[in-house]
Amino acid sequence: MHAIPYGKQHITDEDIQEVVKTLRSDYLTQGPRIAEFEENFAKYVGAKHAVAVANGTAALHLSVLALNVKAGQKVITTPITFAASANCVRYCGGDLFFADIDPKTYLLDISKVRQLLEGAPKGTYSGIIPVDFAGRAINLEEYKMLADEFGCWLLEDACHAPGGYFLDSAGNKQHCGNGKFADLAIFSFHPVKHIAAGEGGMITTNNDGLYDALLNLRTHGITRDVKKLQNPMEFACGGVHSEEWPGWYMEMQTLGYNYRLTDFQAALGNSQLSRANEGLQKRQEIAQHYADAFDDDCFFQGKIRSQSGVIDGHAYHLYILEVEDRLGLYNHLRANNIYAQIHYIPVHLMPYYRQFGWKEGDLPMAEDYYKHCISLPMYPTLDRDEQDFVIEKIKEYYLG
Image (cartoon, rainbow, N blue to C red; front, top):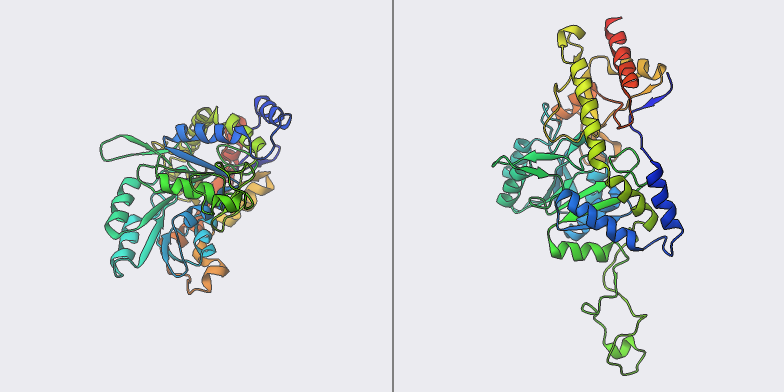
């Protein structure tokens, strides 16, 4: 069998045509395709605003900047995530506090977050960054009530979950990133994600003030908006009196960054977005086939644990098993050209975060999960023969 990775982009002829069309246009960097992508993505998730940026990490960094995170402020997040979910706070000098995960969902455990908040004077913590890990939507309605109770902002890391949703207390679908509960939400367009743009990210919000701040911060803190200009018009015109601002004039009003997306990346992302629901359906079908294969624990002598069935609203960026002898299985799969992956090494036990006092035993649920987790191949072009080969090799390892 040929190599089977854990994730893989799917680029169609239509995608290529859209990129080539943009490459042949007058714009490569800041052109019309970016605004088109932003508008379509906002509609897809149900948010008022969307801001396209260079990548998911840039989206996180700009979000905490817009939320005015400062040195010494304390923010809570999960240890089971990519390091960028935590690092963005450190970029601003803030302090990270990790809360443990729910072992049934692998998501940030809201009861553990409440314990942190209740165990400190009100105002100790500035914000919470919950993550829609593996594509499973976290219940942001509950987190919004908790955040409001303790005066915290809410930043949803939805990189794994475009198209995912949870059911609110009224039974309504609430899509990840729709802006109804979190102040901001971020997405990634890395090639292994649902929507591939090479790199790229998106921030969604329903807050007009945060939206304006993000637009400014992603482009060096520079504005040309005449309603926002601060210097006298006579200065802008070089000492000459004028009734209008000169066409060249712009002002850097804050310390921003070059976190812009290119027009040809936006063209690719927009093309991919047009079939996002198709890819989501395929991921759910793949998840169901895995779930059916690993549903009988007795068959595997208790050596495999899985979340049986397809979970309502799960976007299935990843399909994760918890297994005994994870290293042995990992090596066995690699020997058969199956490149499963581990998501993730707990962030609080990375050497960088250990220097702040985090140690083994602090977050037992996350640490136990890490000892057993393995992510199986999951992407829309994974065909049934490839998936059955993966299942066969796992059974072979545990059953002989």
